[in-house]
Length: 250
Image 1 (cartoon, rainbow, N blue to C red):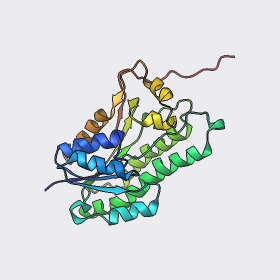
Image 2 (cartoon, rainbow, N blue to C red):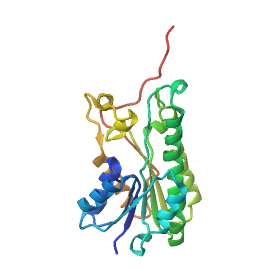
Image 3 (tube, rainbow, N blue to C red):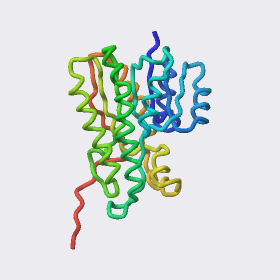
Image 4 (spheres, rainbow, N blue to C red):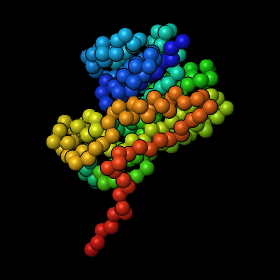
């Protein structure tokens, strides 16, 4: 019997790479995104894998609930939920950040993740099996200038994941928080609102992680023996390390 993975934000970056990885292994895939044309293209690319696409925005609570309740029987028993949809917007200091950017990050990175988890988790509990993988970030652990709200949302993902584990003790459901560091995808282009020159400078002179690296890690965590749970996994490229403490000298 084929297993089913449900991936949010599947049309680019980590999500697309994960869809390709699971499809290669013969899993059934439920793929979500906000761009129907990209979902259609991805479904064609993944053929002959069994794919069900859902076009909606994870910020919309009702849409999340309706999407899960509309799943055909062949895709309804979710074995793995990957809460991948998320974004960073801006790199300005808190005092000059755009408040609407903060709201978008909170609505997507926090609320969207909660909506999807709450919609799918009861079914996993009923079947007493499943795995929730949340895409966090090293920004949820290590602060940096301009990381303000984005880092705060990823700190939530970290702690929410651990609290899910506490609630699920006694079940056979696993929860994993994946925390990438410097990774070259559309992430920085979105953060800088389409300014590709600024986005490219982030990776200049480095060999960053790529989406396929994260896809491999996520796949590995979800295919370990069922008694093994990776609580959290922090991953950086060799070209990245922790910053020293910042000191302002007067």
